[in-house]
Length: 255
Image (cartoon, rainbow, N blue to C red):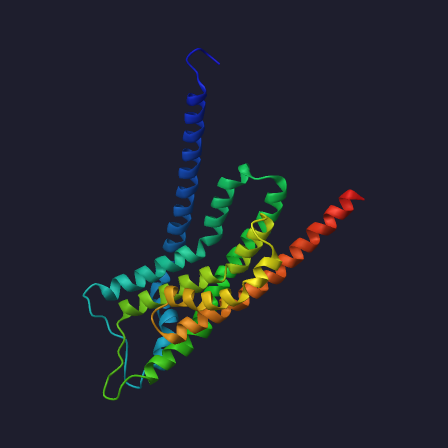
């Protein structure tokens, strides 16, 4: 170290290196999203038709979806394709996050993180699929049947896009609950026994989360709250298995 060097300079260099690494990972994630979107752009109309099918199936005979704004027929399929590009690129995005934080983890944490990252990706996709195949048909059938007499149901495609995006995000994030539970238990923040005592609060909280993350209707709120509660129970089972395996490993090490 020269006379001009100091611990402050070292810290500044380390911080700068971390910022440059973060920038590199963010740019790679953005490139992945942009690349996936470009690949999907030629199929934007097919993607829109696929996403609109649950609503179109339950519209009254003779009705159709409408576009109010001048640019909506162009922008809505494009935004939908961008969303699909982001979803498609999630494995790359998660890998970039993993690559950024991995150097600061212990070997045991790395072994635990890898399967958790894969599981988090699959659970997010599962949440989106649950929203499309289970929630959308039930919700749209209910909404259209409950329309007052004399009211023509013709949904604006821009409003429809905002609705399905909010549900995709809500269900994708909610399905990550088992991963969050395992991480908390693995880090020693809580235990399966303590979590089990919070079951009544989780049940009530699931409906509160459903109310916050979904549009203001009881159908989508309930269809989100019930899976959250079931996923909590599933995460509880997995966390107990994790604790059991950890105890077995400690006993083998001691013997």
